[in-house]
Structures are given as structure tokens and as C-alpha cells.
Image (cartoon, rainbow, N blue to C red; front, side):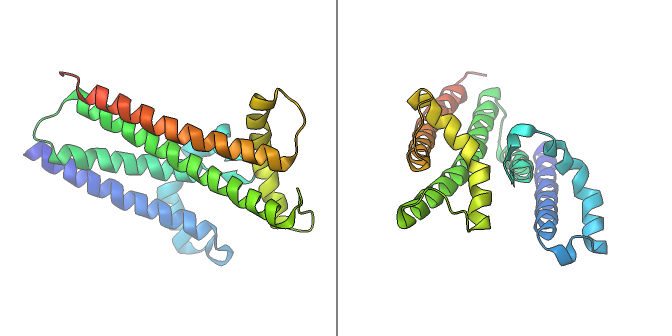
Length: 200
């Protein structure tokens, strides 16, 4: 009972810290508030944690930086685990590992969904305008610079390096990520079920 109470308190503390980190991230998007006294106070509390993820290269895709999202997701995972532990009558390694596997896939799936949405939006805009690039749009130019390396790397896998249009590359990348999400969901669900049935 004492252990469950400790887990409940820890889960609440992690949830509060997650919210503070979220507020800090949102305030960085508002130039007039980025350097306020309140934002500096939040920075002293949250930046030591958030900075742990900023140096990870694969969390950057062009101008998109997924490191804050990963930091928040890991805090949510920790909060969920602690909350789960506070409701468990008895602990088993299998159930704990199973939950970690499910939460890890949830994090990966969220990032894949965000990328897929960007690819589909870009593809729809190309289909509407019947043009591969929008040189007159700085927003779309920035989006293209962010997603183009990923799009071309995925499409190269299926075309053997043969040159194809940006539209075709977007279609291949979108379908590939969609398939990965479906297969990943089934695979991780099966792995989580298998691990949860472990007798220890």
C-alpha cells in the first residue's frame, strides 16, 4: 500500500513536470514571451531535461525538431508506468516489459503519423496545382527542404536509384510509412502480448 502511494505521488509529479515542459515549449513559439522573466524561470527548470534530446541528430528533419516531442513523450511514458504501478496488486516483469513495448511503439507511431500527415498534405497540394514545387511559397519550400531527403531515401529503396518525379517519390514514401505503421502495430501488439504472458 505504501509503495502504491509512492508510485501515485511520483506519477503526479511527473505529470506536473510534463505540463511545465509543454508550457515552456509553447512559449518558445511566441517571440514576445520567449525572453520574459517567467519563461527564463521555466527554462531553468525544464531545459536541463529537454537539452538531453536536442543533440540527437536523427530527431531533426530539416527545420523540424522532434526532440521536444520525444522528451514530452518519454515523460508521459514514465507517468503512465508509475500510474500503472500504483494500481497493480502485484508486479511482474512480463507486464512491465509489455507496457514499455506498447508505449515505445506509441511514441514511434506518433512520429510516423506526423511525418505521414506532412507527406500527404504536400502530395495533395501537388495534385491540386499539378506542379512538383512551389518556388513562390516560402512555407512549402521550407516543408520540401525538411521532407525531401527522407522522401528520396525511401523511394530509392524501391526504385533502385532510378530518377522519378517528386510526386511519385511522395506517393511511394507515404504508402511505405502507412504500411510500416500497420505492420508495426500488429508486430508490437503481438510482442507485447507474448511478453505479458511470461511466467515471472
